[in-house]
Image 1 (cartoon, helix red, strand yellow):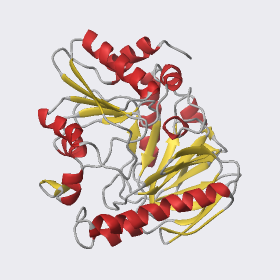
Image 2 (image 1 turned 180 degrees about the vertical axis):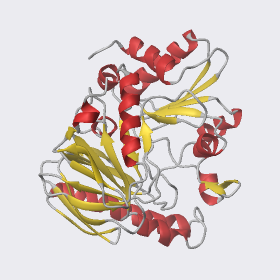
Image 3 (image 1 turned 45 degrees about the vertical axis):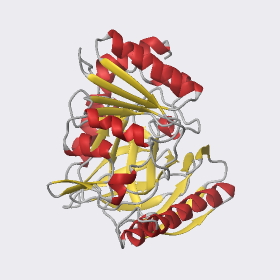
Image 4 (image 1 turned 60 degrees about the horizontal axis):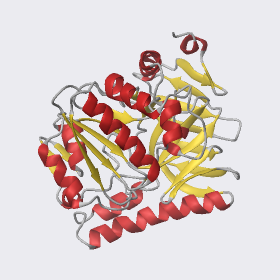
Length: 371
């Protein structure tokens, strides 16, 4: 399904963000063709809807870089809505990394998360690596149907003890999730404290740190510090007591291990430079080998093309993240999403009963029947 860029932007502004007249809309982007085009389309659609739109441009950042000071300062205006339309990442918050922002017993290392997850005054979308083609194909979906499917899968995951994932490529891992809340990227970001990707379309959950056991074979695509790539030689990753003990395969495995190692080294360097509190370097370095996420792709128009923003939303796939999680109890310098094709996802409850979300990449009949 291909819409024009203008139509897709209007759908996002209207159906995803529900921008209102007079709201402050902050768009952060980079000077590269695709993200600039998407940013301008959103700027125009938001202005058409009556929002007070601001567009700020910085050079491309990786997940190991800091955002420009001016970008971070723009959050001081307390915008109601933010769109990070980046070629890679928005960038870290230097000041909050050195001295985390506190809200009660919560601690935040980025002003963006402080406002969205803490104060819940901000709603947002973020689109690392989006292209015009991707935006036109995947943004104008039936968000009502997506919401209903996400809700049903979250209901299945609620109260789970562990999740057993297998796949034809060799994946066989048990992921403990007792007490964890499933999260969704369903494109419903109409209220403060909500946000997610465009394209939308996944349900995800944070594994308990230090608990996962088994093997994951990434045979779809992988995220690296320098970008994403389609996997030609599957990457075999072994987890013991929640941490990676080996990464094997071809060139892709070498690149993935290099990204993990870079994250480990960066954690210690940040501590030496005073960018992290004393002792935090070792913690974040260790967590670079943790399992931070299990996600399930649910966007019917997403395809595996070597761009993780889209790949992780594709039907017939699940993804695991190496590094930091979304429950903020296993901070790391990296969060590397990597895909498994055609998984079987079995949810196991404390009493031993179970339910299937997917078998060989196909949604269970009850989930497939949702309209």
